[in-house]
Image: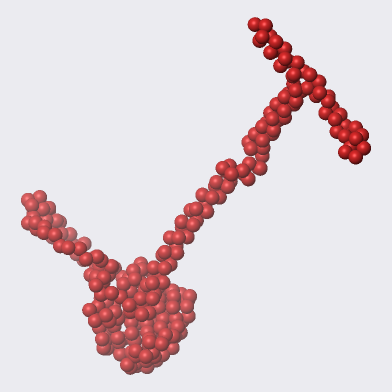
Length: 289
């Protein structure tokens, strides 16, 4: 026990022994500043200083805007702005993709570049070749009963039979003789109508002019965008009476027929009708003669 007491006394003596911190002039050795210190005083001051630094740092992080500059911390406003920017960038990427698809459709109209293998004239949509599966086509008893009920309903539903089913109504751009019909097999995605020179070419439906310019192969070309994914193209015109960005009405004159462009063989209107980026036969909707 005496040894422990001696150690304690020695430690206490070291802690409370007064020491003097003296600052001297190096040249003259004149005393500039002196301070009496003990190890206990130094320990207490260091502890209090550390506590103050931790307290001030915590206050800055918790209650001041300076915390936004510390990695890992962000204000609610910054988080909200970051979320909004992420949503806008996602919407922008979708808009860019739609715009690319739209420009590709216009490019197809101008060049007529379409792979026949991917073209389905019945659905006017791109289809994938899938192997046919063997399916039992024999109707079941439930199918036969349902067919009979539907047939009886249709037999006496006079109003449904009388109502015409028309998906779209288009105005003929010109009236004349069709010299070459639409043929997906021959990659002729249009109808050629022979007309007199300077015959007025009219818009088939309300729309917006998305292209109106001259091309080397097809001469003066004007393309209209309509509702429901429809676009119409008028090529080999002698001159154009509408400009890009104009809004035209059904039956409004947009060009005069001619024979411009390297591919033209005479005065006629080269007319194309497109749906969702794929050509369709205009004669299904328009009577040209």
